Length: 114
Length: 109
Image (cartoon, rainbow over all chains, first blue to last red; front, side, top):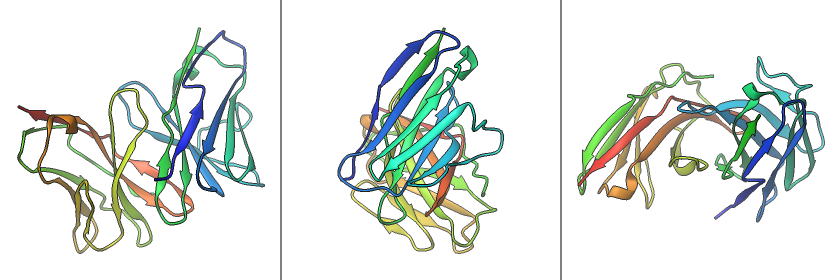
């Protein structure tokens, strides 16, 4: 089946630094990828839609200048959390759209900001 | 985007069928219904999805009401390894998914 990977699986950083998270579709090409965030004991919330070769579209309330998304190829999307603060600590999960309606999710990245 | 609601928790005896309900009364005509499950600190695992018709695969069955306002995920013979949080979601295509708050399914031995 289709596999999506994320790197790193976890990261700890100091407040004020930037962190980049990679999302890769390993055995298929994905024109569209999505980024979700999940706080402890809560559901997944869509942050943004990443389209290859164009600007990402962000959900209401998500700051595009803080969460920079780049989708430079059909197999890679990156999310950079800029000037991270403790409230940005969360589980960040990406998904990639396959040929049909199915979305394949990555294993997630646990971000802890000290 | 459709709002999905799910019961927060359910118990089911091992070997019995687990029936998980989801309400999505505001789903639009082109939005799919998806089911995923998540075990602590892992990414969501795809189970099944459908648009109008009932669907079945090796993991589960999905029953969608005719008016599409609700659906039921059926795990036919639950095992202890099926204990997880099950999420109902709507959306699909070029749109991201709107997740419900999830049902914590506990399989009892």
